[in-house]
Length: 203
Figure 1 (spheres, rainbow, N blue to C red):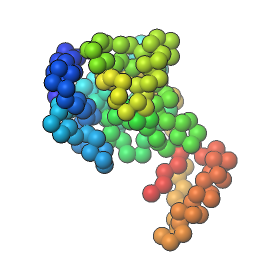
Figure 2 (cartoon, helix red, strand yellow):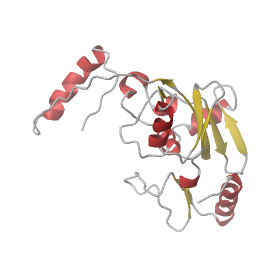
Figure 3 (cartoon, rainbow, N blue to C red):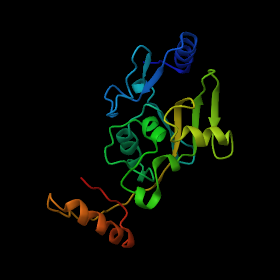
Figure 4 (tube, rainbow, N blue to C red):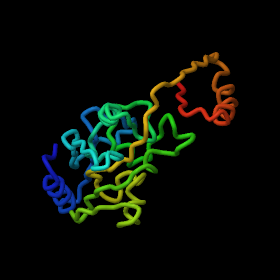
C-alpha cells in the first residue's frame, strides 16, 4: 500500500528493472472477475491508501485519489447538494478503476461513460514522471489513460466535475418473466430513452 507518490515511483522502477508485471488494485476488495487485479510473480499496488478527497475552490469539482471509492465520492458530494454526472450502479469501486475501463452507470444511456466526465488526471508514467493531463494539457495522454486499461501509466488522482443532484426522484420497477424478460426489456429500452428517463438500472 503506497504511502505517497514516491512509493509508487519506487514500485514502477523496481518492476521495470526486474522486468516483472506491475498491477494496481483500487482496494482490498477487487471487482475484476478475470483476475486483472492479481499479479502472478509481479508487484501488486493496493491503492486503498490513495483516497483523499479535495474540493475545488469554486465547489464545482472534486479532486480524488485514484483509490477513492465511488460511494465515498457520492456521499461527500451529496452533502453539498451535488453529484458526479454519471453514477455507477455498484458504487464500492475505485474511481481510478472505473475511469481506467470507461465506467458505465445509471445515466450512461444519456451521458456516456464516467471517463468522459473528467476535468483532469494525474498520471505516473513508466519512467516515473508525474504528468498532469487535461483537455488542454498533455491531451494525448489524457485521452489514452482514460479507458486505457492502465496501459499508459498509473492514475494517481482524478478531478471530477459535479452537477446539481436532484432533490426528488420517481422510481418505477418493471418486472419481466425469466424466460423472455431480456427480449422485452431490450425492446422497451428505446421507449425509456425517448421519455428522457435519466437513470436506468437493470438486473
